[in-house]
Each structure stands twice: as structure tokens, then as C-alpha cells.
Amino acid sequence: MLNQDVKDTGIGFTHEDFAALLDKYDYHFNPGDTVTGTVFSLEPRGALIDIGAKTAAYLPIQEMSINRVDHPEEVLRFNETREFFILTDENEDGQLTLSIRRIEYMRAWERVRQLQQEDATVRSGVFATNRGGALVRIEGLRGFIPGSHISTRKPKEDLVGEDLPLKFLEVDEERNRLVLSHRRALVERKMNGLQVGEVVLGAVRGLKPYGAFIDIGGVSGLLHISEISHDHIDTPHSVLNVNDEIKVMIIDLDAERGRISLSTKQLEPEPGDMVKNPDLVFDKAEEMAAKYRENLRKQAAEKEAALHGEEVYEDEEAALAVD
Image 1 (cartoon, rainbow, N blue to C red):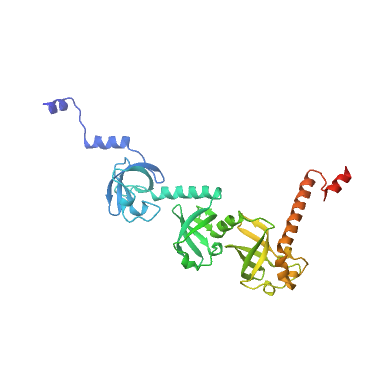
Image 2: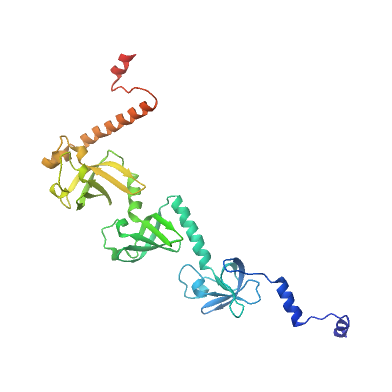
């Protein structure tokens, strides 16, 4: 009787009416959009997601995370609601393809850009090496450490699994380039305990035509050929040998480029002593370094005075004589 009454009122709802109603209230989804959806089915190689479209959207397993996923249950739960990225338009069945990986990818690049701006030191384990250097993951992104920026005596292949402190050298999302430096992170940490004019003990680890690389407590500094002696020398080999232990003075600390510049020339009591009598240079190193620091102090005072139009006096008597 009730059905008859409804029929008599003239109310009808056909399949065509239902389709028209869906079209009227259907949302338009475009690739690149971010939408909220609910997981309602987990499959061996993907998941079906309700985002309010006519047909359930599909999330393939390779798009579930920026990291490797073997089973959907590792990252998704039934009835979980979260954000998804629309990866492709509808296929012939009207189904959209979604991605979580793309959202994580964009957020990861945003995070590493922020870390680079803060000049932060990050840590990551090496997961592979190649001829050029080592590979790590930062915020899920694959990063590369060039061999020239790895400060360790270990063979590169032995670095796999080792956790390293790192600094950012290049962050370029468009070119998918994330380059890091282990050397710069170590140098910065070491620099915090070093000062220009300080004498340190080091070991010669490498000789090049332009100078010598000196290990000073786990980081490398450059003793340029022009800073070995006041006397002209043709090659560092004529004065130094690999594994020699020597005293050097720090003359520059460049945290931005991760470089430490060293000198024995400034420690010579007499020009040429590093060539003629290096032991004397090392014996007098602290004394000569103290004079070097005093000269630096005077130069800084003169520069400051010049900025204010003042005159600098060497001692108290000279200052009193002017009064």
C-alpha cells in the first residue's frame, strides 16, 4: 500500500536520474592535486582509496612511500584517512592513480632546503659506494658524497653501514642533486677548537706539486708550497716526506669551504730554517707563533684605529709623551 502511494505521487528515480545527480555533485580531480582519502581495501600490490570519486582510486605499492615497501600493511591501515597526491588522470575505467611517495618527496626537498639554509650538520649511514664516492639517504632522498669530501683513511667499500656527520654542498630539486660533505662536517667540528696562530702537531699524509696535506687530529689541512719556507723550494718533496710528524701553525680557517691553511714559513726563526734546520723550527714553534699572534693583534688594532682616525702607540711611554 505504501509503495502504491509513493508511485501515485509521481515520484520516480531512474538510473539516468541517479547518474545525473552524481554528475551534478561530482568533484573534478586533476593530476597534481592533493586530496583526502580513506583506505578501504588493501591488496597484494596496492590499495583502493575512497576520495569521493565515482570509482575508487588506486594506490600502487611503489607509490606508497619514498622508501621501499614490500607489503602495503607496512605503511597503511584499513579505514585510515590521509592525504594523497593525484598522479595520473582517469584511465578507461574511470580510475585515478594516487601517490603518497610524491607528497613525501616534495616535503623531503623542502626539509633539506631548510637544513641547508640553517647550515645544519646531519647524520646518515652509507648504504652503497661507487667509483665517485658514497651514497646516503637524507630525509628519504638519495644523497651523494664525492670521494674528495670523504675524510677517512678507510677504503670506500668499508664505509657501507657507517654513520657519518655531513654538511650540505648542493641541494637542487630540479636536477635531483643532493650533494654532501663529510670533510666539511669534520673540519667545522675541529675548527670550533682551533684558532689562527695556534701551533698544532700533524702528520704529512700526501705531497703534491702545490703543497702538502697534513693530518691534524683527523682532519686535513693544506701546507701550501709558498708557506713551507721563506727560501724558494722547487717541490715539497725536497723538504717533507709522507708520514713525517711536523709542527705547523694555523694561518686561516675557512668554515664555508671546509679548509684549513697551515704554515711552517711563519715559524722560521731565520728565513730558510725550514730547509736548513727544520728541528730548530719545531723547537722554536711556540715562541714564533706567539710573535705572529702579537703581530696580528697589532695589525687589528691599527686597522681599528684607522677606522676611527686615531693613532696607535707601541707602549705607554710613547702615549704619555704625546699628552
